[in-house]
Image 1 (tube, helix red, strand yellow):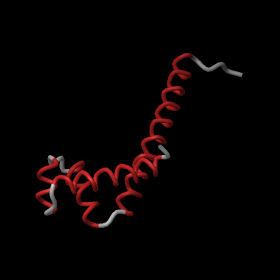
Image 2 (cartoon, rainbow, N blue to C red):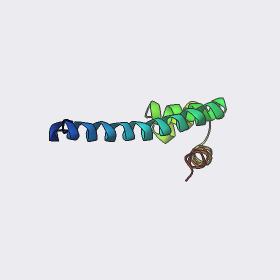
Image 3 (cartoon, rainbow, N blue to C red):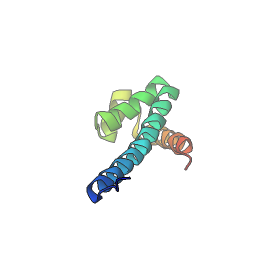
Length: 88
């Protein structure tokens, strides 16, 4: 029986850590995908503009035709849904 060398063991541990990191990332990606599928069009657009397009709050509100207080109310509700989906 041949012993595993230090280099092989190091590479194996790196692969295990990478697999674990990917598993966590996949969990978060699925949570966001589930959330986006659940949201109505206006709230989904809010998330897309704010987080995917990087618009500032005032611009998102302007694009959606809502005031900033409504943005914050929607945003808080959406983040609460995401936290629940993540089990937080």
